Length: 227
Image 1 (cartoon, rainbow, N blue to C red):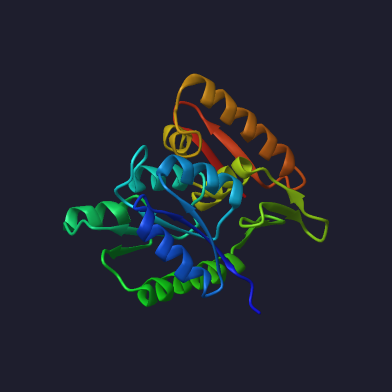
Image 2 (cartoon, rainbow, N blue to C red):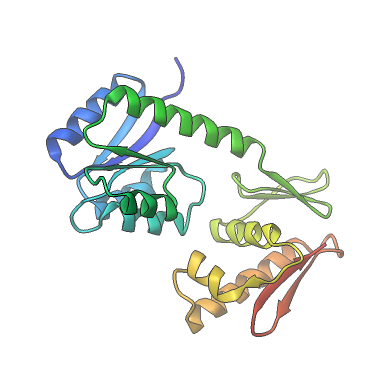
């Protein structure tokens, strides 16, 4: 039997949530059902799902707010929004904050299942090819691992991996300090800025075996990675 897909479902309508959960579980899904966005955020952090299905209108924390917070720490997990809203502006907002797909209520379970499978398969394919070369290093972003030539890989923390990913993505260009602080730390205050400086120092140490790689401090603007 194929491995079950771990899905987190946030839906405040108890009856609908249970119907979706039970239907998915008969199709080889492992479903965690949450009644609001606050619970969903905690379950996301503890359960490590492969895909999120989020109702937009929820108490305590709505689906859009939840998605923004998760996108700040995870750029790859697929997100499907469920909503009774039909305004174009709402659809646009959903995609602009990082949603991958959008289903308007009422919807068929078959349509939801097809869309979930498509997104999970696409994400797995993308992750399989996300080894990035930087100098003599290979960087496996999904696995959060940095490898020098044929040596064993060095594990990175979640924040180290995301910071290095953004530096590489903007290689030879200045990575805006305020932008990356807000994206990875959620704020660009003094203490977060000092924390980022510490992470930059850690990355420099881990990359020092290739002296062609430099992370340059561009005072007043941010950092630039060159190789």
